Amino acid sequence: MTATLERIGPALAAALGDDAWLSFETELITGGKSNLTFRLRSAAGEVILRRPPDGELRPTAHDMGRECRVQKALWSSAVPVPEILLADPGGELIGVPSYVMSAVPGVVVRDALPPGFSAYPRTLARNLTDTLAAIHTVDLEATGLTGFGRPEGFLARQIRRWSRQWEAVGQDGVLAVGELAAALADAVPRHTATSLVHGDFRLDNCVLDPVRGTVGAVLDWEMSTLGDPLADLGLLLFYWREPGEQPWRLAPSITRTIGFPRRAEIAARYAEATGADLTHLDVYLAFAHLKFAVITEDINMRVRAGAMAGQDFGDLTGEAARIAEAGLDLLATP
Image (cartoon, rainbow, N blue to C red):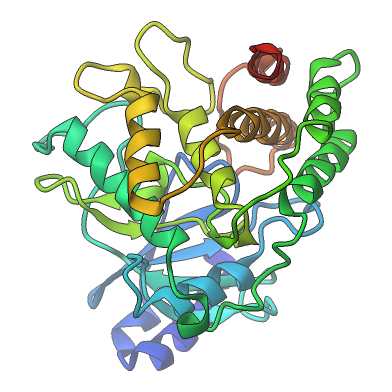
């Protein structure tokens, strides 16, 4: 980032109307497993910069322009998002597409509640679920998002997309991922709803108020689109591990601890808030397994290639297979 400061400084100073941004410090915010996130600090305060990882990028992945568009559209809605302060979709400033957004006060919860966090876990879970419901009930016409994606045939198309992604990153000998993709292609429900879809809605993609447990901002919109809202619910429940279950190596496991509700309670509250039919929820949960298995292997390859700014996520050998096998078990359950 050091070599790019000369270009970012004047652009940021002009956008914010404050020459204090001509000089600032940069800090990588660790924990992100896709795009890279940096905290920029100056005498004027702090802001957040987002950019793709280094190296070759997958088609349609790491889309900074998409993140900017949806957050701008949602800024005046009931969905909490950071304010976009500076957008560079063409990559003129630092050589790759990027944007700068406001730093929302609060904390990001991963594997443990941070010091001073006093909100009750069940309250946090209710607020998180209600925020997902708010995303799925946002007025698409009022926000200008009616053309944000192609909702028709969303789940079938997503299964094909992630199957192709696996072909691009998959390791020899891992058969379960391909088997899961094939099984899902035969299990797509006929009738689905349409809404804004976040694409990676989870606890640690939200900034939380540590006292009230409310969601101050939803982050990481790179996979957002119009589609089937139950794909988001399935992914949230995939991340929501319960007591006695082994954690996924690349996902927080704090929901396994005392005080957090079970997946069934999350699903029931969501259904009450949205009126959704959860008859085929296991299909969406299995799809989440496919998606995260591919993401896991892709991250594994990027870490090995040194494209994650020095971050190391441990030994991921066999993790994609373990995730996919769990997805197959869901589809095999009567």
